[in-house]
Length: 239
Ligand code: ADP
Ligand code: ADP
Image (cartoon, rainbow, N blue to C red):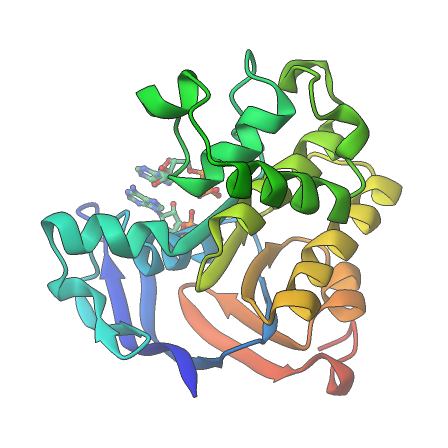
């Protein structure tokens, strides 16, 4: 079954630029898809359209069969909680511990009064420990987020996303600020999340090599158009 359907989506910005130009593709549950394209191709516009950070001009986006343009208020908030976001800049709360950052995945991206007071169930705390263990960061449980290296921060962000149990994960240039060796490790953790929990992941990548190594399928975007959509196994760097 398709978790995501993007049907003829166009995004026209007020300045006349088409961020997306009649783009269509479907995503099956459990797929790990790399979205590749040059800077300005429309990758971020695509992600902001899928998580409804911005509205599209034409077309439809369905997630789990629901037309997301129709969602508002409580339904929209509920929908957003089911989309896991991984960012280039990690978006951890610096002054909080690794544990609290991961626990915040339980409720959303930002701490509520409950999370600040540390009011979590035993079950949630155990789940945070399992998630951190999965990305090999358990030893940092009580360290402050800002004491970590970039690669460690991104692994904590991945654990936070596991805690969230999203239907769909959007990772926007997750390794763009990391060195090649660290990038490999982070991509492995992101990929592992997929294998273990059958989560569906869309990842924006600059590196075609990382896309070929880790993705099931590669979608290429240029000037807002879909120019490539193939299984990674059938792709080469020259495509
Ligand atoms: P990518 O993420 O692949 O680098 P973007 O989605 O950021 O590409 O941008 C696609 C195109 O849309 C670019 O030409 C960019 O300048 C333009 N664009 C992106 N965001 C906006 C915006 N808020 N207003 C106007 N144009 C935008
Ligand atoms: P990215 O490539 O990740 O989209 P950018 O630096 O291109 O990052 O964009 C950063 C922000 O600037 C985004 O919120 C985007 O919407 C906005 N933006 C990008 N291009 C334009 C543009 N041509 N006009 C107005 N805003 C833009």
